[in-house]
Image (cartoon, rainbow, N blue to C red; front, side):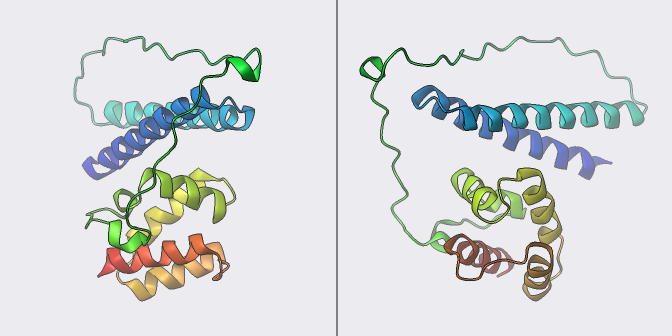
Length: 178
């Protein structure tokens, strides 16, 4: 039960990080596609919160009703004209171009993936389906060895091995299982 709650909390934490990044990006560059992704992420987080609440209720322990705190999210509006749009700060990339060199040892495969790489993998390997990506990552993290993880990855995703994102993902798996 505790492991299930921790997994849900980890997923909710990742959802919050994703939403922060999306809101910053939407504010800097209004784009309807990113709004759709943000709405989907909010729905996914609500579902996880509901599931966490259900798990808490199933444990039978008395938990005080939490106070609901309203969080104000800045409203994103379309710019009047491009002339009035503030200049977006450039996004800096990490100093090391090789993904495997940037990864720190992690106890969970999900935590071994940076937020930017998570977006890139979701987009380029999983066709934008973050829920599917999270499920595949969970299964790969439970694999007993690198060979089993690579076999599972190939069977679940059918990756294009010439895609740079796939190569980086495999490097990430190698680093995680080393």
